[in-house]
Image 1 (cartoon, rainbow, N blue to C red):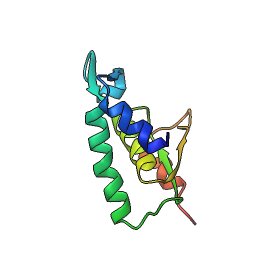
Image 2: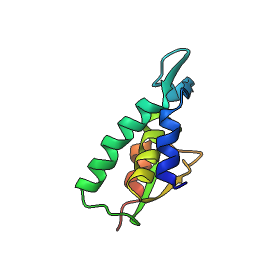
Image 3: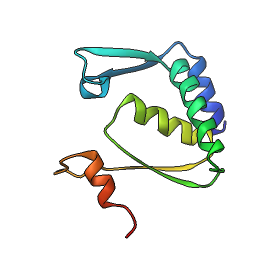
Amino acid sequence: MSTIERLEHAADADAGVRFVGSSNAGTEGSIYVPWRQLHDEAAVVAAALQARGLVPGDHVAILGPTTRGLITALRACWMAGLASMVLPLPMRMGSLEAFVESTRAR
């Protein structure tokens, strides 16, 4: 079974993922999201990545805390056939924007 087939199979199951704490966009408690919903959202992101010219085999770096957005982006990369890498956040990061700016080509 291919990666895409496995993702589609998981989306068809009666299962999902529970986001808690800061990964729940700052709300208290937790939120349950069915895999089908995440899969459908990732399909939209995958199409957007392809529309921007990314093709299977291209490399994509993903930077951010473990959130619903990160999981959706990661799944979208897999669905588009992209080679994705989740980068670790620096321990002493003041802000994500400042870190990203410091990584720009000089």
